[in-house]
Image 1 (cartoon, rainbow, N blue to C red):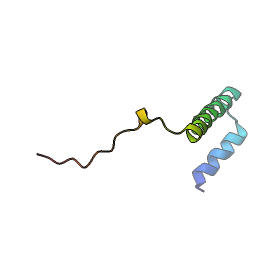
Image 2: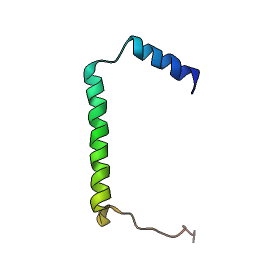
Image 3: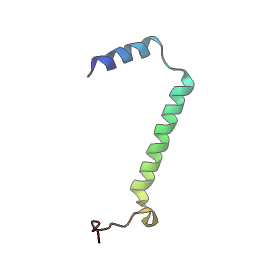
Length: 59
């Protein structure tokens, strides 16, 4: 762990962020986890998958 991270953690312990920022970050993390869970259950849609192409050969 870097010394800068330790200093940042000590500053956050002394001055915690507002509750709305904490709720915002937790909400975003929950949305990401829900999307990940849906992808694991039903898989990635075929129409959103890019086609694999070969290497580009200049004419």
